[in-house]
Image (cartoon, helix red, strand yellow):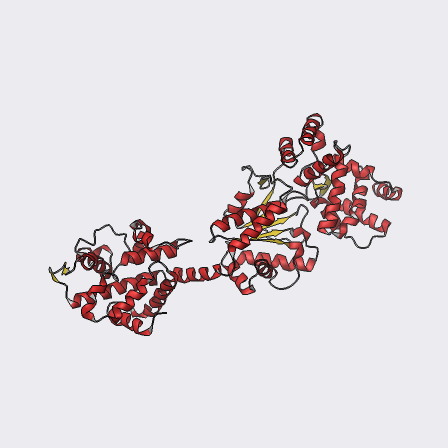
Length: 552
């Protein structure tokens, strides 16, 4: 903060030529500039020196005070550059092009005249303010002449002229600072926010964790695409850098949604580590959140180890990239409804806030979220892409060759393996047995069910095999949703099940990719091998009878 006597010094010299209604705001903007700038910090001292020096001696200090260009370049650097810490030498030698915008905005016209060598009064009608032209005109006089001559009178510079030039320079400083006051205040707040978190340490932890997480896995950038889109496949890096703020990654179990979000977190952490002014990635596993108010803000505060107030400030200024994983895994309906409302409200209030959410959502979701988000689904994998993925994730050349040979002879075996998870399970099965499994579908489905029960903790998994067996033994290629739900309800009565909800179980089978929607009214097994597996694994005669009676 400037001392009051120096503010009085400024006021006394500009009150006859400046809009005093905005004087206080201009001084506050100048003070903010002083706090922000580290390259010409002596400027404040120069002002004090001018104020404390007797009038007849001010000519000797004016050459170090009346340097409007350096002030303008430093101001431009602060208000226009994300990382604005530049040395005084760099600012002094900066090309004038860098601050033309300041001149254009403040003085209504970009300079195209040699104001240091021409009579400034000849250009007052060109849109320039007299104060700017006069201080620029006298720059060389005070900088280079030991006994300066007034260029307008060809006589020694008078004390009056010195005081006029000081006043003109002060008006310029006030004009420029006032014009960019909001940018200065915002930059100061931005710097304050940058101290909330040790970004380098945070990013290094993400990078270490990711490298540990992928030490037994080679990341392959499975392409994503919008539904029915004709555009090229999209990588996770393109999703991250997309101008679209709200994005949903949609896919069945094992598609690679979590892997994609983890990869996005890693990419952004690498960038943020190199350029601390970037946005902060925050990965949140939604099946871990707890009920309460401001669920996401509290989670950001927890992940970044900062206060809730600081978290809210970062969010409100769009400095966070939300990576929300597993919306479908929230099994508590009131919690899911509350969280959906919070996500939607946050996206509405901060339209530039980047939110990337993963969800199965193959079945119709009972609690929608981010309904206007851009949806991406995994692009279909060709056999060659599947083999490429398995080769990169198998360090055993013998196993790789075995799989390639089998794929050439039995390509149909690999058609049901639509997801990275299915491919990984297949690799493990081949590695364990040192041969191609007789029934790869059985291997995959058993591991898939174990994963859903152990990791996703969905209670419906205990009952799902009975329902799928019932749908399979019906022998129908397709079933109406109504018929499928009625069969599930009949099995509940037969088995005495009271917990599972028929619709939830049907949606779970769809989300896992075992069933697929044919349209809004019908469903079918997504693979004939899936249907045959559940049909052959059904040994409950009473269950078969219930299904046959339903279709009788």
